[in-house]
Length: 90
Length: 186
Image 1 (cartoon, rainbow over the protein chains, first blue to last red):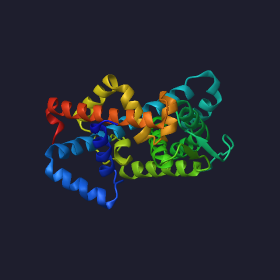
Image 2 (tube, chains in turn blue, yellow):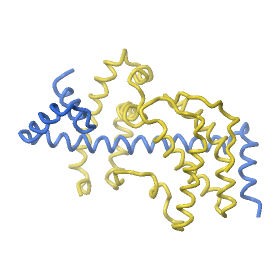
Image 3 (cartoon, rainbow over the protein chains, first blue to last red):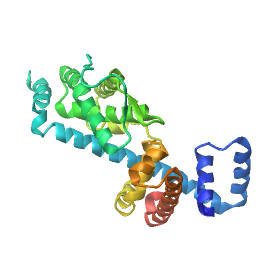
Image 4 (tube, rainbow over the protein chains, first blue to last red):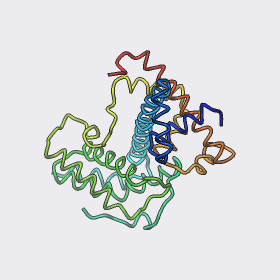
């Protein structure tokens, strides 16, 4: 892997707490000496949050599309009727 | 709530890709949604409310159940129904009818800002391939060998390299866009 990717991997190990004590200490020291690295760490953390939001959005869309299928396709008619009957009764 | 377990055998099912997830969701909809809907209807709720609650419950269930594997234990339907019931009671008690329940209960350490949404929209179009790969690894927590297969990489090694390349690319986009969207840093 090229150097920058190794650094990205190290940032990940730091953020996801996968590094052992020694590695963690070295990384902390590196961050103190290198403001650019510290900045990258912050952006990478933000990136994981963005990925999680993206994952959730996509999963919600997948669930909604399953809902649409179940409540429109002919082959799920009896299921649909069973559900809808629950909400029509007084 | 009575859970009908007839739809699916009680065993581990694989949920490694979109097709398998769809099959799982259809199966869970058919086996668990009727009891959730029945419960919500009995409590005076509407179809839309039952739908919203069930969908939020599915998301929470998915996030809890996957935790590090590609499998899901299908005899945990009572657990899914339990989450839905809990969400309903919370909504019912607090009576916040105008607040989407998803924003109340899906635990999130990230508040979704307007700028986050802008960024997500951008990434959905400009970097979809990378985002899908990163989603599989970090959100769906699929094993790298499965990811390699799904995305057509020669092996785990090449999937790993690609993952870090994407991570780096998205990180740079996030940084770059942050300077464009003023309200990003608050």
